[in-house]
Image (cartoon, helix red, strand yellow):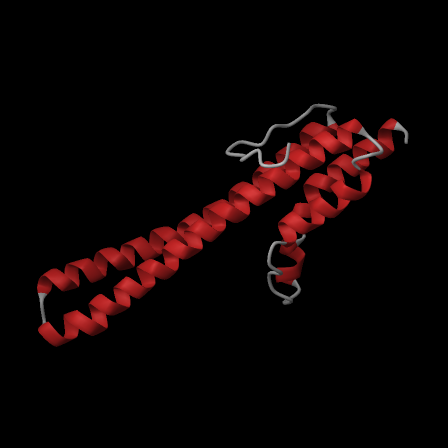
Length: 153
């Protein structure tokens, strides 16, 4: 494999993790873990052909696993805050007409908003960092993702 092909496969390892974007834009919806599956397939198929593909592919898959974990955590937080808000608003606040309960309901709504913004921030961060990684690869540099859990060694 020549250097240009190798670099193209490395760029594909990084950019394939953004496959969820056209799926959403086409109305298909988000396929769970496509951000992990796409680079993992490229990495598994090509890692034995090149040490560069192996290193970048592992880095990309680790980052996408990390982003999935962070997204799931934010989603769980979102569900918990939504459930707590509903309990306070419908269950306790309406029945007892308690202003303290109303305060907690408002704070839970604020937490819900923060959790939603966190999910959006994770998606924007993922897109920006993956594009940066592909750019660095094109320049011939190794890119280390920030906040990356190094699960695959």
